[in-house]
Amino acid sequence: MRPAHVAWLVALGAIWSASFLFMKIAVPSMGPVAMIGGRVVTGAIALTAIAWLIKTAHARLPRGSEWRPAAVVGVFYVALPLLMWGYASQRLSVSLLSIINAAAPLFAAMLSLVWLREKMSALGVGGLALGFAGVAVLVGGEGFTAGVDTASIAAAFGASFFYGAVSNYTRQAKSAAPLTNVLGSLWIGALILLPLMFAFPARETPGVAALSAVAALGILCTAVAYVAFFWLIAQIGAAPALTTTYLIPVFGVIWGALFLGERIGVHHILGAAMIVGGIALVARARRDGVA
Image (cartoon, rainbow, N blue to C red):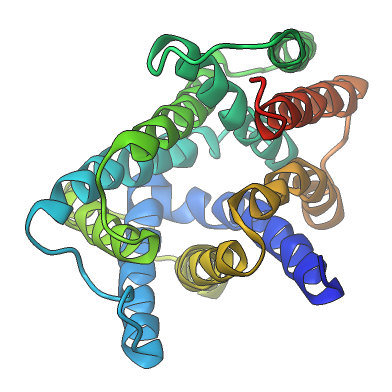
């Protein structure tokens, strides 16, 4: 792997983890619905503009039956889980949100056993056990924190679960090229969220910081990040490109501590290390063809 590719992997981990920081900045004044709606609408417009600029065969809206998988992704990967992240961001720290997000590959591997009836080697089972033990450490540690919000934790894990479920769906669905599918799913998500934004408007007139955070969520963390991710997949393959997910909790902890003064507990560090270690074991088992 070239140094430039490594640099892009690190940059993507930093960008995607920063989405939780931007949500924490915007949600107090905008509320979760207006914030997430603004993110998805901005992201859909920005990605459409990028698709028009790059003018490749795969940078287009879905056609005909291609809309069906795009709609599934738009509902269960874009609109619903992002609303759940928005709700959770009102109470949970950036570090905790980013660590819970890292559990998505564990849910994907667990569901593949039931849904896709994949066989699981001892290495894969060990990875799942280690990862979910890390989840237990994380949640258990939060239980000793004053004012912990169980509904917010449940919403965050629910969003992570949907990510894992949809990743299994997309492996089986006959969808369009990835960029086409993402563009269609963003517009589906935008159409779902637009009426909700009128029903649940911003709590107050958002300031420059909140509006800038939403713009960053839509343009940087959604449109630009997806284009960079699919470019990386084309350059180095899907499995190496997915290693950027290992960096999300690391950067999430850094952003929370650096910009919001969040305190990092032992359970954050231990839980994150166990979750990332579990993901690495499951990924290795799959790469070796014994998952």
